[in-house]
Length: 114
Image (cartoon, rainbow, N blue to C red; front, top):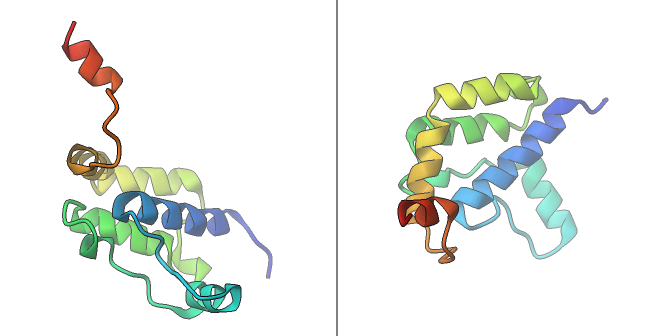
């Protein structure tokens, strides 16, 4: 089986899951267990870890991490359009507003004080 952009879509889905949940989608005690979970484990629901993620965007992540590559978007630009339509911006703004992960001043805070 040849790899295509859909492998990157899966990887990006894992990264987005971790960004929004603070946890990787799968863990294991060794590399074989972790790989097996990526290949066969059910995709966890990011809303379990972050209730601010919209159901629509949780579904985007689930589709990005689909086990069968045929179920993932084939082109990254298709994914971007799909995510935007499902409320990516709203989900990320909400998650950022409620995150305690970073307390450093942001540019927007600095601009508001001018």
